[in-house]
Length: 316
Image 1 (cartoon, rainbow, N blue to C red):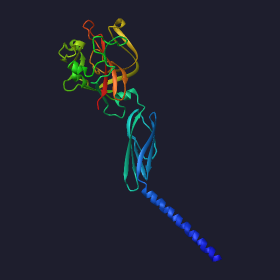
Image 2: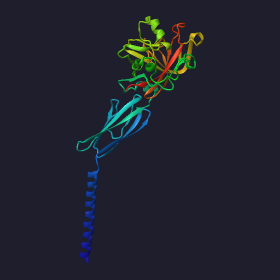
Image 3: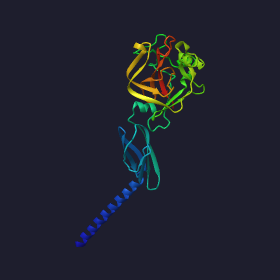
């Protein structure tokens, strides 16, 4: 009887041992078939980003946050110094030395200024040009308090009007680049000319600077212009812009609570005239709308009579 119990106990132990070995083998096999994978999950609050490296069978993690800093943690939290656009890259390595790289695009604390310049991380700045397609908000205005539409012009401006209508397609080619540090670049292309006020050209060059007077019916032309080296711009929100106007008391008018762009020296954006400061009405990641002023009357030299409201697009 005692032998019988011994045999039973031995059999039970052997069965348990087989089960344990089988489970260990199954676990090893399961591990061997789990693929080496990596992905990124992240959450953003302002300029603070919590990163999570979602990986299988990874032995090490390396994060490049896109701002010159790195981390070897699997799930780091990083605070960026400046608002802007960044590309964060996670590189993971397994025990065999194989690697996987994943990246995520970040848009952090995007302000109108970042939309204008591309942010602190964009060394090339952000380049704009007048949109050939225009928009329903583009029109030729009077320089009064309401920027009312000028009755003698087609409003809103049809697509390509400066080219197909006025024979000045080069107006759509000039490029204007804004940098986060306040630097400014201007490319007038091969003709060396800029969109300009006709009267301004006669007053400042005696007409010698006029290259194309196709827009003369509206006081517009293209005129020779040499971009300023080391130019800068000033961006201001909730500004009060006071500028000359035939509609203003004492020959001036003020636009309150507006966002403005102003430029160093003789620089400008869009339209070259007596007034270089412009109003930024609206901006998105690839489009902005500006109000540029124009003095078009020989009876009021240098005093604004009109405004040209145009949409600009980004240059890729």
